Length: 407
Image (cartoon, rainbow, N blue to C red; front, top):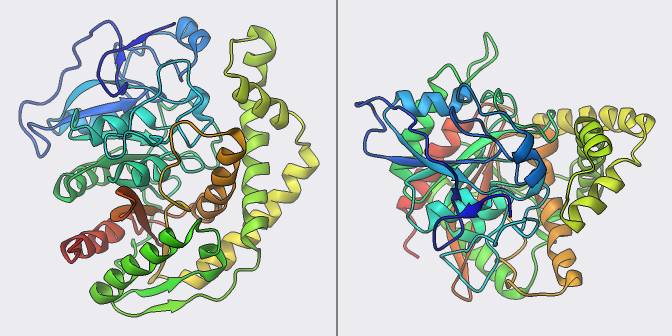
């Protein structure tokens, strides 16, 4: 094993200690945070969940801008958190280490690939933690663990110091249990040099938002109990923010949307990793090896065709949202699957989960996961998806909803 884990929920990597200085005072003073092992922290290697990557990786000479922003605001770094290998899974299964444990539902999966970060926050081992989300890697574990999680607008938070999976979709986001902590962390990051808003763009405020539900995506919710719980938490949103309308259908179906996103992501991830994989022949989790074998089959012609489809889909969604629209979605199709299930059962979950995640992924929109629901005692998250750069406004809406939740 290339590293060990140091805590009871398998969240933190047990690495040689290196002191990472932080400001003595600031808005995040007395708060602790973990960092997913895809993001650079000065004094540490970035191993990406792979033993060969870890062995060959240099020690980072500086922290990623988003990490440095948190340190400068007074937060204390308490460790690197484990990630699924090469960020290649949303369930937390593709790892060379003992799987992270979901404190909110210990008999169920924790979720990935930001598995350690979510587990650390859920267990109270860190006040907040950084993760990444390319195709659902913050949204899934946030829902499974019953915590807050944000996939940021693509390009909003600097990905300097992030090991890439698919640059057109890669985002850095964060988890917290407490909405006040989550909001404060968000303000620090969005006001720092790690955040970027295009010149002249005024971020949407989402005052009196137009709320949409999407029946075309809700059909992927698994099981009657989850469907009933989704309706219950929709009613909380309705009572808090106003009536939720049914959305029109988008130009591409959910199945077509996930097809577009998957083809683009797979092509890019192979371009990034093919030299390393062909020359180094690294030790890979069997499922990751199969996945990258499939990635290698995506042709440049297919990639270019899907780039055009992506542009059409994004324009259509942004026309629907305008400057004030918000989609209200289930974060995932159901509660976390049980820790020990068949491969077929895993596929029955991951396919609809990928479909639900695909809207924000392909369009580059922010999506906030709120810990509002429960089924059979396990968390079931609700998401708010807004137009690009509405990240702060979504958090403000989420705060209103949570204050009105009497679950």
